[in-house]
Image (tube, rainbow, N blue to C red):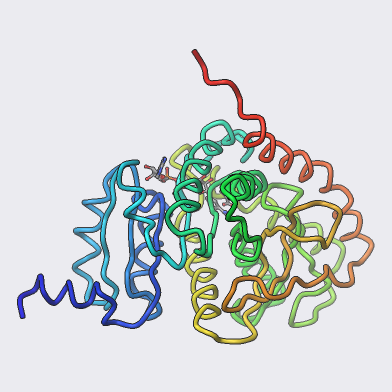
Length: 335
Ligand SMILES: NC(=O)C1=CN([C@@H]2O[C@H](COP(=O)(O)OP(=O)(O)OC[C@H]3O[C@@H](n4cnc5c(N)ncnc54)[C@H](O)[C@@H]3O)[C@@H](O)[C@H]2O)C=CC1
Ligand SMILES: O=C([O-])CC(=O)C(=O)O
């Protein structure tokens, strides 16, 4: 058998596993995320799509001797073939922040990028699980929902805003304070993914720990501003990429294990739900073969957390509405 024939055999699905596409695969998050997904035994086919440099990334990654077959797709003309038949689509496409910017400052560029990519998903793999990383997540997920509704293929159980990095950070920072291995810590982070909309629920952290008021103030502030901490440290060279790729791969792996039929997979994610009066909220969800199978209520909150919850609602509401309006009443094209 020639090498080409062998590749073709694997590409026909000889290796068991799922088909995964990464849109924005040549970027700061996209490249390490592509590597982590190429290393996953759950992935049989990995499609890397970007408007820049995918042939280079694919040439490089395809030399790693893991079983997933990797293929590259470059530019809008190749979006359809990149998405055909995918089980999971992960989207880190779009511009990152520079110091002094908020995530909402990215809306003008990233909203249009996410809209176009989701139009492709609606057309080519409407049953795929979608993981949205592109900021502002508080608005890009509602944008995706509206695009999918317009195309008549919206299944709220299959659309996720990835907030895993907030949980990863919370677990790390809490582990530092209580002096244990971060692997042992689990802190739910609810709300959204920007500033005060990020609501760590330290009272529900495991292992159980009684934090002082000073520790609560320090941890809440550090978790809510973890993204800004990285943006400032990178001094204009972008935002979190390695920790985000780690978090995105962790979340994607949970989605794939659930698709495979594993039970009891619970993650925090920003989803369409009714745990508050807002139409989207990050909360704990149980994921199964068909996407979200159970949405968990917020659970008991202490006075400080209840105050944080009420404070975040106006900002999150505004970000959601901004996303919805962008699709329902699109801005007139500039002449
Ligand atoms: N959800 C979260 O927790 C986090 C989200 N982010 C967000 O992820 C996004 C990506 O960040 P980085 O990878 O650092 O940025 P980057 O600029 O390094 O990479 C973005 C990639 O998207 C590509 N791209 C641009 N327009 C595209 C299009 N129309 N179709 C396909 N690809 C396109 C670019 O060519 C580039 O390769 C940003 O919006 C950032 O704010 C970053 C960290 C955490
Ligand atoms: O802060 C940013 O712009 C990127 C991001 O969402 C994060 O690191 O949490």
